Length: 480
Ligand SMILES: [Zn+2]
Image (cartoon, rainbow, N blue to C red):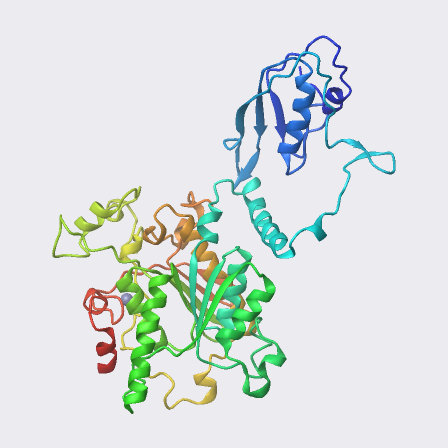
């Protein structure tokens, strides 16, 4: 027999004892009070205690509570994440009167409803902001994505190389995901054209020659959300094709920059490449590949973009295969819980070389290049040097770069996850958030995205073992 909530509240405790098999809670908005005890509220715990007070009058020791969760995801209805638990009620002395239930009493207007007490002034607004941000994110887990691992996202340390159009948008999306640790690297100053496209800067920031982007971005992030732990480094990233050996001073500065960049990459979990030239992405790619850090790269054309994760090289296998670092033997031995190992691809009928590529075999930004990274700004007019792109493009690409990172983090194998392709759009997704592609290539003129995947090139100028294994990265840079 199902009882309504109002029946429970009006219960006289001197009546004969009640016998409950289950207390049931549902968040299904289609249920009515006639059919089930409904608590259409996010704070179910409060209502459980409320009902338990009623139950206590019925002299029960243990009550079983069923929290029914009904979810429909991609056409499949599921109740798998419903929760069943037992509540053991504390013993009460025999002569105690029944406790009054809490939470439900008449408000000043004489109607039944929640009574509100405004405690916001008593609380630290910064703490309030933090708990609100967290609560907002937790709402995603309530019904839509119960298995979402938010801690993994929030605790990821992100290094943003470039605090321009892409950097600003990436930072804002990271903040939306509650990421607390964000570090900027940029050597530019804010110019008058920047604020309209770069949402962390304002007109005042351009005055007097302009503030440094890296530090201004940190100031703005702290203003937006004081709980963030942001740092800014006003430094340039040494690039191949841009000689630094003019003088001893420039040489030692470049050496310092390399050391600093190596240190920063070591200290972070994910490196975002958000610069405006190809060659500036080279050194961080080399360092991140050697340190096995996840790299998310975003680059813009006029109306096209690419957002990609770089292949994450496996650590050298010490015992089984000492020589070959990228053989299929080493990949299957080191792969911990992969359900679709690399070797599966050829066996599947209709599959190509580019399906089911595991994360450690994926290419980097430079793998498909036929030219070595060099000075791409020389002999070019202004419109060819700057990234001239449709204004919405950076927001789309920046947001996708962060969403790609979040999806990768939700995969049990992280950066080693098999690359999803456009063909996987109809298949069971590998994570609770969906696909984990290698690349997202967008074409704004067609409002279309494709998800290609490509293999690492064993002679790549940035991620091949011979380059990433180089001991003196600075000496290599000097030769380029
Ligand atoms: Zn490469």
